[in-house]
Length: 286
Length: 236
Image 1 (tube, rainbow over the protein chains, first blue to last red):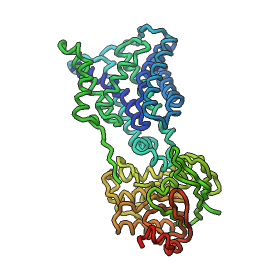
Image 2: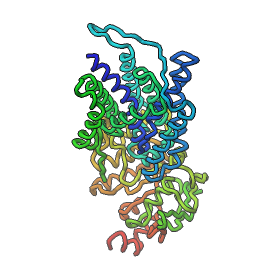
Image 3: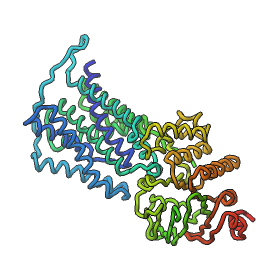
Image 4: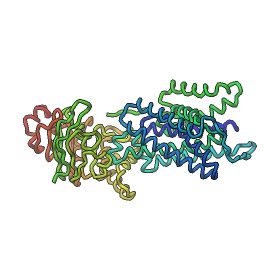
């Protein structure tokens, strides 16, 4: 029971990060490999601000800093490459990733530093003792995902995002400013990453310049498992991967192979269903 | 004064020159058609005027405003839009959501609601299928949706790129009927067509495009009677 809950909450973290990958891929048609490092930026933001203020304010600062970083990276690094080859954009994204890690290393050094978060304790649900951080991660994570889904489905900007992801040219003919939509997408994706970084710190309370690499790559795997470009896909993929990870680590025989099993799952799913669980095959009709 | 005035427009795809200096104009209230074979540069002209592909030289003036270098979305806000070649409705959105997208430039919810009702009156089939995902519509229905979607922004000038492509003869007649009705309601039309007979019949004026150049122009009737058009586009 607690393994399942832990898995779901880790899954929520992966899902929040995966949403950033999948939305940016869907709308800007690029793989933003620097997305994992946004988590690191968020974590350091919390690390620094927590020293002088309370947690809530630290969280707000972290979200703002991540959103700004995401938007600035898009503007400076990706926007000039809008019509360049996908490979150039991909390499640039990897470059941005190293740039962010390097900057963090310059400022904070390369060692990992512990961060003291207020202890949240645990609560009793029925017969089970559940840690409060698990409940918060799951609850807030679910809330954010529902909010995002409603935003995309029910608002003018959300619909424009769907339209751009399907057909940029046609969306422009409706009067949609594609650059603005891409900017909003980066801002939303980075905001979700900031939230994820807080939940991640609740699980592993230490910061380092490469902190974003592992959750980043796993969330990317989750986005691909769910079907990259698909928002519900990222959620399903993230939760699935989180569950698999926690279940594997709870079984002693499987524990050492956890990461291998997770990425094995990715390979198997891609073999069986190359477009991912909830991916859509775009049809062309003339 | 012409509503749309295109002067010496040239477009290159890499080193290949697709448009070799095209000039034409569209007056308020007219239906103007560009006809030409595949590869003549019709769609390139439409996309370039609309700001979807960059032009190398020349000017496009709409309503007295130079829009040559303006991005597509801001041109739409000026009151001009296009039904693109191949319809390009949003396949994964419903009919209703597609129409909402068409009203992207409109802020008033009440007005959007009224406009959508009006589109359903024009195209009853769309009303019947409003909750259906556009990708599941037939080609004809998608064309209706694409036209309805474009009308949602109340364009002063509507450009249509081969609206009759791939439709049955009955639907083709219907499409031209609708275009004629758009004009009656005060919309100026710039049409690109391969179906020269049908499009010239409803046109006030027309231009013939060949290899990126305008080779002939005149009223719809004049071109229908012209030997060159008869030979090249009307099969006789």
